[in-house]
Length: 185
View 1: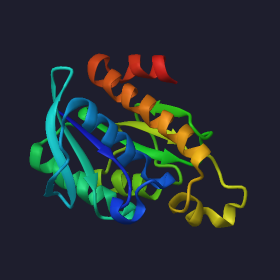
View 2: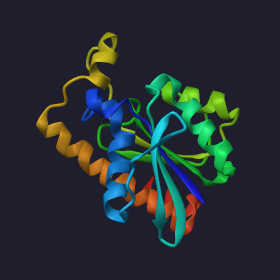
View 3: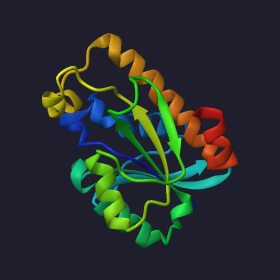
């Protein structure tokens, strides 16, 4: 069983922002594989289903970004999921806008949601799919950049990146993280 986590902030207020690339990607996976993300538990919204013959849980933590790890930890503990079967999808300011990068393990970088996941799991050994949102011109304006208005031309680029991220997640499930990294990095 795979746990696929998209990081974001509650969609009522933050839908369509750069910080919700994880949620946006999960929405694409949910739609394509008919997995409704409508159950409430684990401090989040989740749904269960099948992707490429594998049972999956799609999880959107509702704790706000900085506490995302609490939701992930509760779900992992409840379902007894091995960290080899965890995939976390999130936005990354250190990648060019619209690019994706897969990693088998590693630190959280500057992303507070990932810092929370790593801290709560006490491990860096899980797969992640990073979606590049680029760096704002004025770095002191970072918060407004990640949770603020996204121009239409940029939405197109980010939507394509979420589509590619969705395909990369499916590749991880089908063929493993190493092959997926070779195909998508």
